[in-house]
Image (cartoon, rainbow, N blue to C red):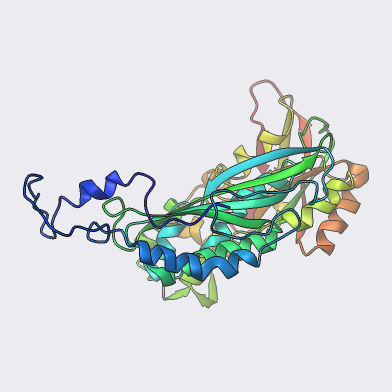
Length: 386
């Protein structure tokens, strides 16, 4: 099991930084200094150890068959046979949260940002038909604040619990000089498995197949550089009421975690009712669906098939964003696209709804004409500009 380390992987970074004093003057490397410590250079090993102690119970709470989810060793074992697999193929993903972190940092609200980190990785796993098994994170900051670090890891552990995977370890890197005070970055790594022959490849998708959409919980974790630009130019503060959600302040509304679709999607996948899934991340509804269908086919989506959530309508109007740019940047209310055969569409929709998803019938698979895009969204102007 990977220990959480309070020091950077390359400690030389801290040594270089230690040559600069508080006023920015460079100390001569020939000038003798006595009693120098790693803490003097900006890296507090004791704080790192305190964080490890604080998060051990959080990691243990994510234990599942195949792993005990403990921390402290150099690597993590996972027993695929104990997890119930006979002839598995491993699937691996990695992702981050992006500049949504800037809102969490600006408002000091770190509790749920870790859910986004897990979601961005495990949703990509289930698209392959894989069950998430284990997760590791990389948390880098200029100065480690134990309380904030615990909140961040608590969110990661909660995301793992929702997805059913074990948090088996990670890296905490305190890197003075690399990040401004209070800043941090997150990266996640997930490994899943699917029995050989049961992986989703999209090869069986055919013209006439039905396209379903699973509702998103909000913006999820893409497009936040544009979101932050629109908010900044609007003059709104994050502690003010959200214009599109008057019952919540702006920060709370924008930081709504990315929905995790794992447990709802796996049963209809295993029942053979789903041919392909597309996680709607960067590239939105235009660039993601074509990734999971054969090149001679196209995904036709009708914007009349679901209501545009208020947050996207506000962003579009406030930022004067073209509907085409909206569809290429944001999920616009659809976090996962599902492709199913017409004969299985009702069963897939019922299973997903029974598992708690809001399911919309949003389109169909068509033959792709030469030079035509792999996906198009119809009726955006008439539906989204009401």
